[in-house]
Amino acid sequence: MIGLNIKKIRLDFPILKKRINGKRLIYLDNAATSHKPKCVIKKQTYLYKNNYASIHRGVYTLSNIITNKIEDIRIEISKFINASTPEEIIFVRGATEGINLIANTWAITNLSKQDNIIISIIEHHANIVPWYLISQKIGFQIKLLKIKKNGNFDLKQLKNLIDKNTKIVSLTHISNVLGLINPIKKIIKIIHRYNNNIITVIDGSQAIAHQKINVKKINCDFYVFSSHKIYGPTGAGIVYNKNNILKDIIPWQGGGGIVANINLNNTKKTIKDIKFINAPWKFETGSLNIESIIGLSEAIKYIQKIGINNIINYQKKIISFTLNKLKLYNNVKILGEGKRINIISFNINNQNSYDIGCLLDQHGIAIRTGHQCAIPLMKYYNISGICRLSTAIYTSKKDINLFFYSLKKILKKIQI
Amino acid sequence: MKKLNKKKIIKDFLFCKNKEEKLLYLIKIGKNIPLKKTDIRQKDNIIHGCQSNVWLKINITKNLVNINADSNSRIIKGILLLIIILLNKKNIKKAKKTNINKFFKKIKILHYLSFTRTIGIKIILKIIKSKLSKNI
Image 1 (cartoon, rainbow over the protein chains, first blue to last red):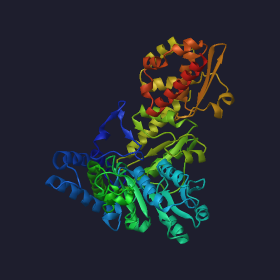
Image 2 (image 1 turned 90 degrees about the vertical axis):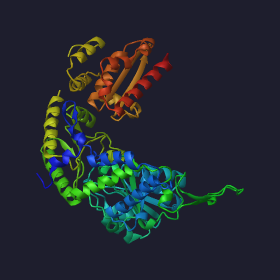
Image 3 (image 1 turned 135 degrees about the horizontal axis):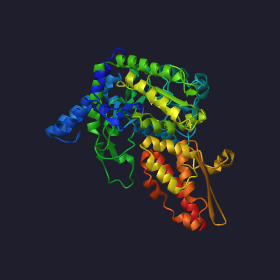
Image 4 (image 1 turned 60 degrees about the horizontal axis):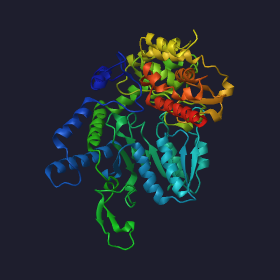
């Protein structure tokens, strides 16, 4: 169909050969997590067989090899998202931990009771709960940016929400439910027009595998994403912090590998007794998930080889093909209207999403059902759950056709 | 559909050829829940912790159990009907002794449901058990 050799790409993903309930696996839950190409799996095995050791601590050869490798990956990732320096890149376990890190470092240091932050009603719980947790400690206000009925942010309301006490605006680049690409560059311009000191946090979990990310152009202060959504392993994620703005802030997690000196002799024990190493390393305490970071690097190389623009073009076409087919159904309610790349959420014939998902599974089809970790958005649309279909570079036209074939069959069967 | 009882359900489940048929059977029997939506679908009856909406009301009259339940998932509604069939009209002592999990294992249904749903069902069973214990 469309530019890329999907047949060839599918051969790179061993799991796609698997039969589920005797049927071809049709994996349409890529917004939750994506599958891994052979090169990623191979690279992780290679690490364990050849280069595995503790990083940043050892003086021996093996430790130096892997330390240099991880620091090279920091450079690769900074280039991948067009950061200015590798020091702007912090390794974390995933986007969720990334937002928790920002909340517990920059926000906890800089916010006080009279301040406020803005999040939106379409956020994943990962971009809601961390802010609530620290608001509980500090007492700042959390304001909510609403959407228009078509699922796009209400930018007029955004202007009204911002005031002199607004310190942070934290928004998703692409909603995990609506799948619409939010104009974050434009939004950040609006925010900065009002106050250049407002810190902007972008949750890039859904965008990272399907958009060309240029943090300099976006001009955000923080950008977070997880490795497992971009064909990499689980357990690794990235926090980009512009100009290393966390450099003077104390870490939120304490432990080994981040202490330059410690003095236990003062009568009054304070945090000043501990001298931390520099950022970004002081935010990476404990033993980093090096095998996942290695895998992430390989995943990035893999998509770069295919070409991110090729991926974007293909995804656009396959999602529009899917959307057009879905619209042919009677009684289908699709959430959101606008530019989308790989996600469609829908309810059909007033059927419960869980029932549809369970029955599709019997046909080898994996979709996500339920509230999608976005209960506020479900409440906005007055629904308890929804079916979400999300594609990836290995989703073929055949997958989509088989999905609709099974959906039709199921809908017929449950009209009891 | 013939009157449902424990024996008939086990027999019917054994006739189901695959998982899909079992799920469709649950959807089908779920329609037999005797209820008026307005009676049960109230805020006080919502069970928190279930991924689908579940409403549950347990009444004990003259030592006899009477459960009314509903869900917006037709599969879960089928499961709720099974619980109702197993417990309703039994005296509290007998109801308490009824091993619902054993029955679910016998018809091999729980492992077809997702992790979050099985947790939801465990919550429902816990609530029922606690209510029965309070009334004993």
